[in-house]
Image (cartoon, rainbow, N blue to C red; front, top):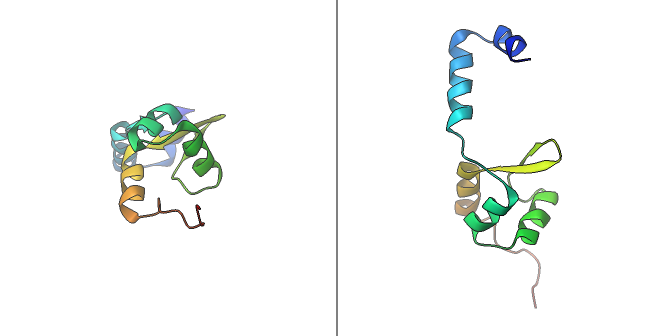
Amino acid sequence: TLLDVTRRYSTYEWTCWKERFMETKWLTVIEAAQYLKMGRSTVYKLAQEGKLPTHRVGRQWRFDAKELDKWLKSGNLAWTEDRT
């Protein structure tokens, strides 16, 4: 429960974690696909292969917009296989 989590951390640690969590812009698969300007099936495929920074919430994928920005800038989007 939330109360159990707050007991494990100091007030400062809890405040930092809470602020970080609240600042995060979480995207669904559809929103991530629109954000990345690629197809939904491509986003699913990359997420399943572990090539895209993702987080699971139950049975759903969630994407942190800042992590997607870093991923794009890192050049990991480049295809490594021959696409002829």
